Length: 108
Image (cartoon, rainbow, N blue to C red; front, side):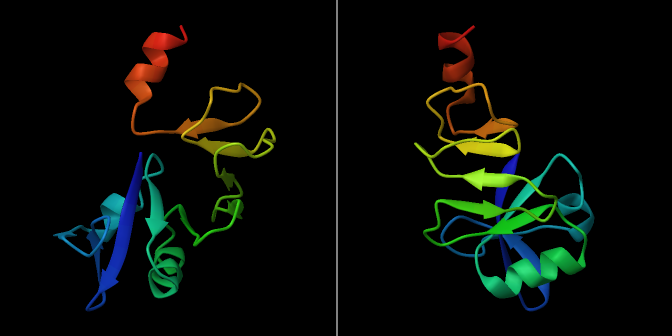
């Protein structure tokens, strides 16, 4: 699961456009959660807390703190790539999409 994370007053918050919901650091340290740091200060704090995280602005690909390649749509993929909003190619490590159920239903 990918979540948008902000650092506010030395605490972590969730929210896409702004810090909206406080969240405990221990939850963000769960290996099943991929933390999208919304600014560089948040990325630094997430890395210090050992959360799986990444930060990007408009890059085609960024490296996550655990060595995956967070890859924008329509870019070349590698076995370590996470395809964002994918067109369902199978040569990556995984996908990230808001419509996973639609993808599963249409491509099984």
